[in-house]
Length: 502
Image (cartoon, rainbow, N blue to C red; front, side, top):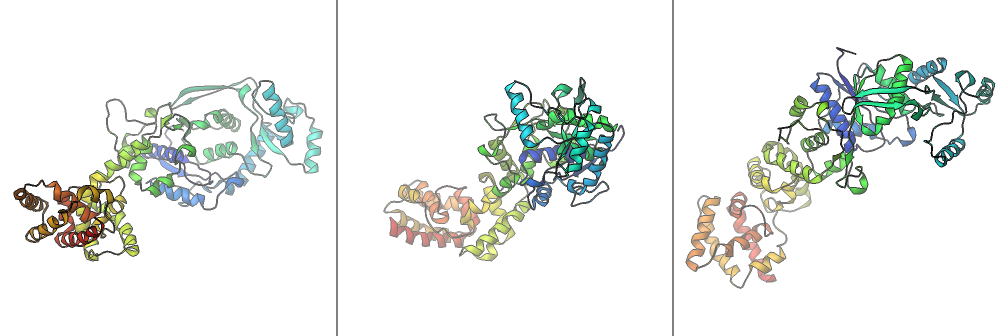
């Protein structure tokens, strides 16, 4: 394997959504492969047909591509090592299973589910680790079952599985890139089922065959598969194959350090996409769930290119990584602050156009659709939004006439003289040549000063009338973006509505 081109894989089961843990596994495989100038492959492991979900395979691949994780080979992209779906490779597994039977490294097992469960319960009562009791291990392989009995079962058409024969009194050792040396005693390893009664291979058998035939150099997967390694290594030994290098990633944890689960929050990547998180944020966040650049580095915001350049498996920790939504939200804000306005426009234009179909507005459509206008809104609101869609949902007043006015704000900021004061101020706004934030501020302060009033007596009512809200960005800059015509129209219209309610 020395000198061979690096090949890594992500091998999900098509059972539904893409878990954030699965995204991290795919990402680390992708980053490592690209760092090493190698290939990243997607293989679909659908040997458990009972759990297969229609459309899940395509959804998994499309979600990964949304995140920028584009495979070099996959069921959708093709490649020289296909098929890339395990249910299309059954003839291959049958061939290798036959070899194990002939070499006496596997045997037929006719134990019923009821017998297996009875044996399991008995071992638990005895304080033993549940394992298959080898009832059907043939005499010629060190068991007690006569060949004649096995032959009778076969001829009768009784259902069976095929199990691997784990060698007795051996130690299985390997070097994990993340965890270092790991050792298992064969007494703790069960005679794993290789082929199920439905003719499909188990995950353990099919993945070893495919990992070898597809020439993967590195297997990077979750910690939950660590206990499966000795079974896989024994199969490599039975076939005389060199195993790939392995790395087992730490668990993802809830804030209370329990294993990440849907009971405590969203775990599907699609859930976070629907909420409006960008692909850059999700990838950056997931990359930091277990990996860090090293001591002395305070960098937390990475592009995909930077992650590829700096990623290393040696910097992945052993301890579980806490999924912190506050950190995820902070990262999204960092990206919004620094993302080019043109890129944000690509996201918010479709949202805005969809809203326009549902709502009415007195703002001229050519103004709303103007890229210059959108750019002004984006630059004013960057620091105040958490998601790109909030440029529309949190500041809809830039695009639509306020339909209501914040009740508490009106109660707090209005008195008997407020509307008269606002009407008196309108000509001052109309007189402005350049409707800029600086000129608006100057004019407002010059207007209230001779009356012995503070600027706040107009600032707050103006904000409520023009936006419907008592909070938002700098009032003067907000009015500048809205424009003179819109501001004056909204003041006049709002005064009439509020005069009725106060």
